[in-house]
Each structure stands twice: as structure tokens, then as C-alpha cells.
Image (spheres, helix red, strand yellow):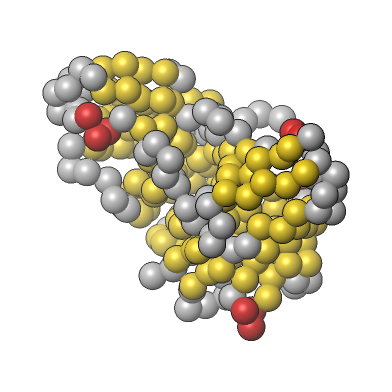
Length: 116
Length: 115
């Protein structure tokens, strides 16, 4: 079965600083990997995804992530953090689970706080 | 762009009552998923439907059932509610893209509070 580990429960960065959120996955085949962001009490918004090909993927809001098979990692990065980036970030691995269905398994999430 | 619609957004029920949550997927999306997110937890997969047939089942209690209708909307029915069912329930929909790729788009969620 697939699993996702996000080692950092809570990260605090200063506005304008760079950001890296860590994600490690366990999956027997080539993984489909995703990053979602969730503001308090809100839904999950897809930031970016990796299926195959270029290991550096670009997403919305200036985020990018790099897939490293050798490290089973899919870390999320942003060069300059804005106060509006404060939210909870979930890494997920997707696995084919039946006709037309791809179940997502999420990590526990990393809460990002941004200080002025 | 159209998004996944969920109703109601908030629901308060008492123990042992029943609840029905509704989900309207993005037009042309053929798969619907239900997830449960407890307080401070990550979303947990409950069940999915593809072309109106149950496709996969996760950690869904026997007290819960779900179906997808001919117009592709889905309903999650929850009976004999327990305090532990209090959570945010998400619906997501997806469409398989070229090359077997896909994206799941999540609705805003229904916050269920059981008292």
C-alpha cells in the first residue's frame, strides 16, 4: 500500500524568504504525486502534479516541486513566500484503485505560518 | 471555471440521526470520490464511483452508503450518527486525461457536526 510522509508538522518562515516543504512517499510503481493547499475551513486546491517526464514541475501561485526517484521525495518549493501563502499543505500519492478511480493517499500535512 | 459543488456546507445533527450530503461534480468528470477529514487530520478516502458504478471502497463505515445518479451527482448517506463522525466531508471529481493522467478537484466540503 502507498504512504506519504511529511516530516514537518509546522514551519514558520518570514515573508520574502524561500520555502521548502518536504514529502517522502512509498509506492511500488511509478507514482502519481500531488501537492494540495488548504486554507482554514476551506477545500483542497491543487497546486501541482507529477505524472512522468520532467522531474521539475511548475504549479500555480509560483510553486514548484521536484521529483527525485532515488530519494522517494517530492519536495515543494517557493522562492519568495507571501503572507497569503499561510495555509496547510498536503502531499499526496495517487494509485489506480479500480475502474476509472485513482485513490489519493495524503500525508499528515505541514502547516505553514508566515511572519511579517 | 465550474467547480465541484457540495451541499449543504454546514450540517448539525444529533447522535443516532441520519444525514445526506450531496455532491455535484465538474461537468464531464466521470469519477466522484468522497473523503473524510477529521479535526487536524489528513483526508481519508471513503468511496469512489465511476460512470455511476462503485469503483473503490476505502475506510467507509457500514453505517454509510453512497451512490452516483444518472446526472453524475452523488450522495453520501450517513445513518446512526456518532460523535466521531464530526468531520469535514469532501467530494472530489476527476476526468482521465490523455496518457492515463488525471486530476482530482475538490469541492469546498461539508462540515458535519454531531452533538
